[in-house]
Image (cartoon, rainbow, N blue to C red):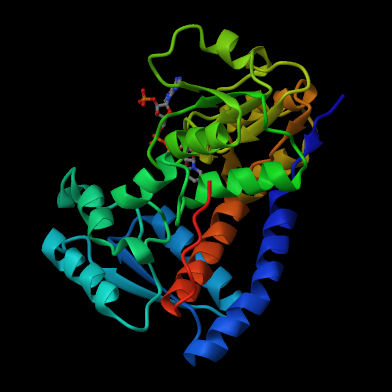
Length: 315
Ligand code: NAP
């Protein structure tokens, strides 16, 4: 039987609708809309798309999104200056540094800039103080993709308590924080990575399987216990027709999408897993929209705190 599709687009729309009254209240109290400052360095096309998506989502909600662009030749000091300006500004509630940064800035550039952000404006939740708070189960700003995954599970009425969760991927932005969040919600969590032995067998033990590894269609039915909930975080753009045809059944409407656009977005989970899983997030339309919705939530929370509302710690 085909898995229940967990509709991230619909859930993200619900979250945005619930935010409208809070945005209006902040705007009235501050006499300006909640404002997110984004630093975009260089001309990475995917980053351009992500920043545009975030700007549009903000505009639609009545937030202000202030994007500062620097050329890829900019120095790390120059980028840090922008972050410090956002920190000092009374008109910016949240700050985000769009990753990845140009490689010319050096390997520690991302971490340097994330650490330069005022933790109370750190709406991506990547500052070590916010990561530490998350690890302690009292987060102020948790990273948006893991927060979105938890919202999606909760709003789809998927029980976490006592469940076995397997997370494939241990990155700072997805794997590690989502594992901590699942742990705080009383799941029994196993975190896997590129050196994990017997990955399919470990994954097959999961009631909830989170795939966040960045390998197109890597997670096949062999990894999935029948009836399990599978969350596909991966976003991979395929341009090779042979590969696309090998993944999709003949007659799939997605083949027409590929023919029209010349590329196709696929997750880390093989499409055929829908025959084994009990519930599955689609790509696109699963975790992606929730990431943006949770950025909006964090920005509104930052605005509320800058208006003097008490800090609310979350698990
Ligand atoms: P990342 O930083 O590259 O981390 C990938 C993780 O996967 C690493 O921990 C790596 O292990 C592990 N891994 C790689 N190959 C593996 C293999 N063959 N077997 C087991 N583990 C393996 O990636 P990320 O930033 O977490 O992103 C993961 C995916 O999610 C990407 O496709 C990305 O585009 C997508 N993403 C989507 C959203 C969204 O909003 N939908 C947001 C963020 C990311 P090691 O640590 O051992 O190297």
